[in-house]
Each structure stands twice: as C-alpha cells, then as structure tokens.
Length: 54
Ligand code: SF4
Image 1 (cartoon, protein in one colour):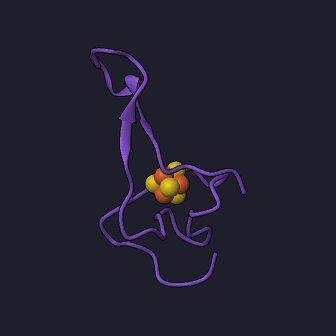
Image 2 (cartoon, rainbow, N blue to C red):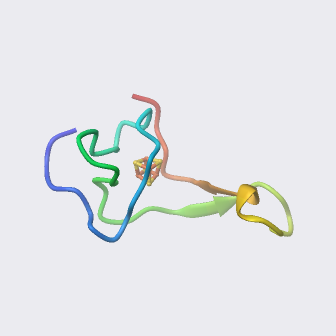
C-alpha cells in the first residue's frame, strides 16, 4: 500500500493490507470500529471493521 498514512489513526496490525508498514499507522482516510459483543465492556470487545488481509 503506497501513500501517506493517516496521522489520526495509529495501528499496530501490520498484517493488514492498509497498514503503513514503515510506521504504526493506517493509510485509510476513515476506518469503521466495530464490536463483537452485544454490549462492549472492555476494549478487547472492539475490532477494526476495515481490516483486510494482505
Ligand atoms: S484498516 Fe484497521 S487494522 Fe487495517 S491498518 Fe487500518 S486501522 Fe489497522
């Protein structure tokens, strides 16, 4: 993925095709944060819904 990263979206998921690689940032302009529990009680209940495998 080429191009400038988004300073507002830090991310360490380097396995994602949108990760900036050289730095721990996302390259998308916008991401969707999701949850996989009906009621999120901890941050472990949330996910990046924009993740795509490389
Ligand atoms: S889409 Fe989500 S998981 Fe992928 S680099 Fe961006 S913030 Fe990280």
